[in-house]
Length: 219
Image 1 (cartoon, one colour):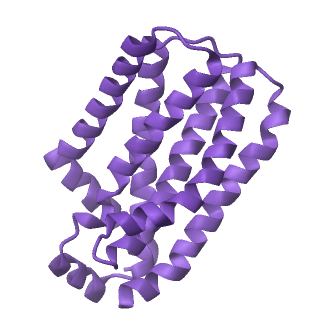
Image 2 (tube, helix red, strand yellow; image 1 turned 90 degrees about the horizontal axis):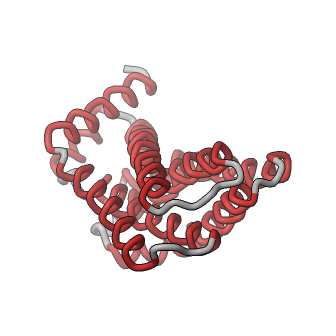
Image 3 (cartoon, rainbow, N blue to C red; image 1 turned 180 degrees about the vertical axis):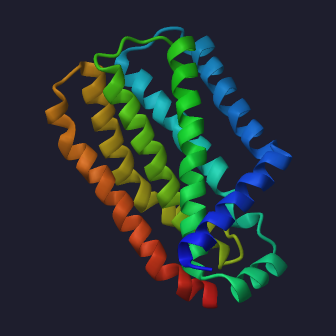
């Protein structure tokens, strides 16, 4: 099979496994909805800055919970089988694409639940939704790469936390700035720099993953 065919097959495999169990996605959805409700009960009403920060904190931990299992659920025997039949680049690319799809769905649900339960006026709802989608995609690409690295170190959660910190802080800064522009209703041209930076982060992260993962997989 070609690389694209391998990627497609692996994505379908992950979708089928997730659809059979549903435990992971249901647990994450429960986490998102319950956290939003708790925040609403605790604060009732907050200013736009706190509203924005709370949303991204919820999304950050939802992303960690959703993506951390990417390689944890792959037992050694299955990994050995993959090693013999598919290109390692197909494995990491399939994980990235699958996690992007998963995070896009979760982020969309979280955004609408958060907006309904914890109402706050948005100057530009469309731009804010774009920032949510870009943020979910960026979380997926960064955490998938880090999850792949930590999986080769015995799925060390401490290592994942250490590696995540320098990668996720700049991403959060850009996302908060972009979403703040949307809340304030600024001209969309003023946010183009942040959008380009987010796209560049995704391209760089995926490129590094494709270059690095074959060497990790070989070990």
